[in-house]
Amino acid sequence: MRNSNVRALALALYIAGTTALVASVPRSLPAFLLFLASVFLLYHLALPAWFRAAGLAVVLGVLMPYVGIRNAFYLEVATQVGIFVALALGLNIVVGLAGLLDLGYVAFYAVGAYSWAIIGSPQALKIWPEATHLLPLGGWWFFVFLAVAVVLAAITGVLLGLPVLRVRGDYLAIVTLGFGEVVRVLANNLDKPINITNGPIGITPIGRPPLFFAPVVEGLGLPATPVVLYPLYFYFMVLVVVALVIVVTQRLKDSHIGRAWEAIREDEAAAVAMGVPLVRTKLLAFAAGASFAGAMGVIFAGKQLFINPESFTFMESIGVLAMVILGGMGSIPGAILGASVVTILNLQVLKQLSLTLNAWRQAGVEILGFNLAHLPTQLEPAKYERMAFGVILVLMMIFRREGILPSARRRLELEEARQLAREEALVGGGQ
Image 1 (cartoon, rainbow, N blue to C red):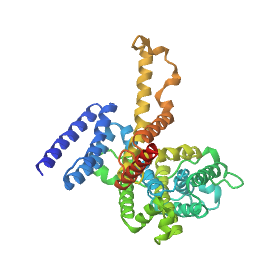
Image 2: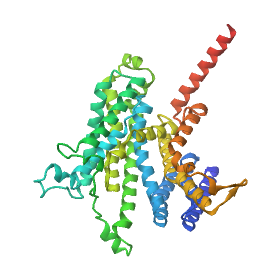
Image 3: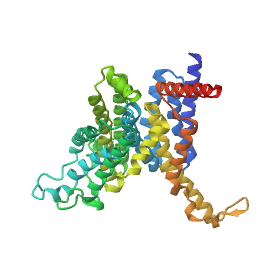
Image 4: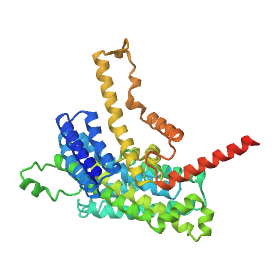
């Protein structure tokens, strides 16, 4: 008890110190990363439950918005991290728990985004030109479409699951990859004969939820302009949805449905022999995973004000899959950590390295006698984002196949596989 109190005190001082640091130097990347590390420390250290809960509430609910007001880009990064955390948790159900390799996951994200973008923008009048008194729908309908997108994406997940029930492994990956491309191509070409998606041009402006709390903010004497409020609004909206997704995912994982998913992941034939309904269980995995992506698609469309088919490419699916693998397949904390690391690496670290390198190049800085002014522009780190992900995945598969924060079951499975391989090698060597 005494040690945990000491750790809690030390962590509280660390959080206060890094918050002061990032507030004093709001453009410092190391200061921001040290501040974000406090969330990981709150999860990882052995602390009293009340302190962990209070710490997460203070860091994510108070300090992060404060830091975001000092530097709006940090709030954008935090919102993007939340969006990808929900996507990674959804894919983690399909890939990590049920063992169904899905390479077209971003299609469900697109379904949610386009469902609101079409109805909540002037694009709706191109489909129903006589409905000017009704369309586009007002901002309050945004919340209705959060639920509609969940149902719509879940139905799409079931429609995908039905034809691939008898397919597994590499064949399943190819089918889901094709499904993802079909959705993207449809979004790219459904501008004729009826203009539904506006094709490659995309849809804008997309409606946003109303700022119903603006009078309260004004009453407190704070600035209540949409430019200030909407980033905070979407940050808290994403935070609430992520919290709901974590609770739902944890409850599903601990239920008989979660155990059925893990059973078919380990041995489909044995699971069927034990009475697991294969069709229903697989379809439920597809539907549950897709529904999270659908909700986040609506938020993404409202936040960005613009979407087009290039927002939902195959590489987005690969990026989300990399998050799940990096964190640890089947692990909820792992999916959260993987999404955070990959998103921050993509949005913040690589871009900051490029900016720093450009500044050094323009200043003619020399390193080991080499003048950086002669460095080709093709060597900017931001241009090697996908290569960085590839290197990370290769290193993970070689040195830590179970991911950074694997689930206990997954760690045990891999350890048993290694032990079996060692025993077979010994037997083979003896012969």
